[in-house]
Image (cartoon, rainbow, N blue to C red; front, side):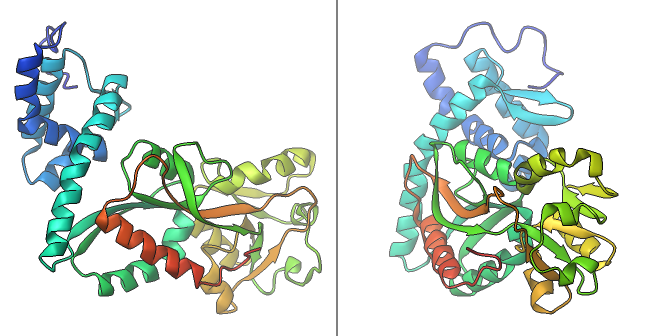
Length: 326
C-alpha cells in the first residue's frame, strides 16, 4: 500500500492462524475498515482522530501479516484490491453485531445515538435532502448523518460494497444486492426559462429541442443513458450543445435563458415552483421514464440508526408531491 515499504513486504505468506488472530484484535483492523470506507488515508485519520502515519503503519502491518496488498493506488486515488474487498466485506459483517448492540444499549439508556451513512445523487441532494435532513435532525438530534453527494451509479456501487447504509438516486435495473425500497417514476423533459421559445410548445419532442441550444448531462449522470439513443439518432442535426457533469449547472444554464436543459424536474423544483423555470415533459414515443428510489442492501437488515432514518425518509417521500412523477 505504501511505496516506501521495503521490497520484501508484504511477506510472501500469511502468518499462522494463531498469530493472525492476534493481529486482527489489534487496531490495524479498525484502521483498515476506516480506510476501506473512506478510500482515503487522510480522511480515515481525521475520523479516527489519529495521525495519517499511524493509519498507514497499521494497515501496512495488516498487509504484511496477510502477505498481500489490500489497497491499490490509481492516479492519486485509493481503491481496494481483490484481497481488500474480501477482507472488508467480512470485517464489516464481524463489526455489524457489535455496532447494533451499542446502538440498542444507547436506546435502552434513553439516548438515541448512532450514525447513518447516506449517499445521494446530486439532484436529490440539491432538492429534497436538505429539508429531509433538517426535519430528521430536529426529531433525532443525537443521530449523526454522514452524507455524500455522488453520481447515481456510485450510490449503487457503495451500497454493494457496504460502504453506505441508504442511497437516494436514479436507477433502471438494480443489481441483485440492492433493493429499491421506495420508488417513483418521473418524466424526462426540458427545463427552460418562461420566455424560452419552447416554453409555449404544446407537446414537446426531442426533435423540437434539437432545434435550439441544449444543455445535457455527461455520461456519468444517469439521465444521459436514457437520452443517448435520441441524441445519436439526431447526430446530423445536433445544435450548439453544452455537456456538464452537474445537475445544478444544468439548472443555472436554463435560468440564463439561452439553453434548454434536458433533465427531470428533480433538482429544479424550487425554481419551477417559483415560476423562474418551466418544465415540459418530452412526448417522444419509446422514451422511458427515470426511476427515482430509496435504496438499501438486499442481503442484510439495517441497524437501529439507519432503520430509524429509513423509516423517516420513506414517510417523508410518501407524503411528498414529486414534480414530474407518473
